[in-house]
Amino acid sequence: MPYEMHRIFCTPAGDLDADCQTFLATLSTFDEDHAMKRGVLLVAVLLPAQFPDKRAYQGTIHQHIADCRYCVQIIEET
Image (tube, rainbow, N blue to C red):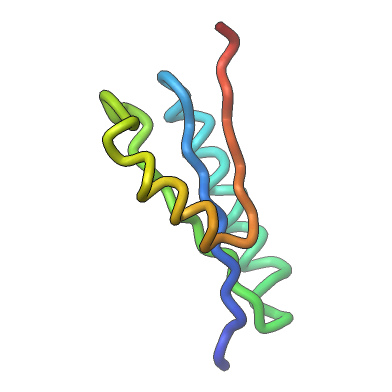
């Protein structure tokens, strides 16, 4: 069955890798339990959580956001 794919860009701040892993696990479970039955697949697009300086890649980040149907930002308390 061909799937209608929806990209979801997620970029966690700081050391929120555990939260990002929870997001990926939840997305996978949702795909299996609900989306795939309807011919839909939610696909995560990620940047590594421990990326030292994202400013050099800002153009790529903006393009990922523009190409995605959804954008999730995980922000830590600072």
